[in-house]
Length: 116
Image (cartoon, one colour):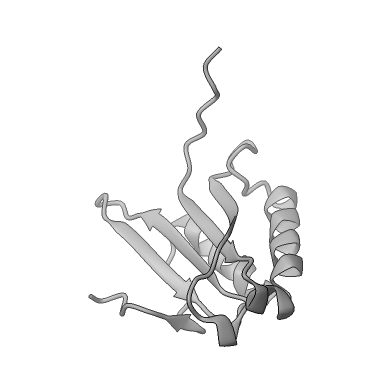
């Protein structure tokens, strides 16, 4: 039997390192998971397109919870964005933007400049 393949628009990863967990990353992950389910944004829901994964350290330990996202642009390039001090409203906006192919929020971003 072959596993079922689900096409996705993007991938969200929430750090579960000790520092991020101490700042609420476990609760953020659960809240975001529930949001993706309720809004049918999860990749396995009809019309959904997002994968959500727990990750190891994303490098902003003193500013957690941290989240990163990857998606393909319409031109096929890989776009990434890294976020620190993420709360649920920001995580939900990031998820919606990834799903819609809209510009990603600028607030709390760190890492490479999107223009690079």
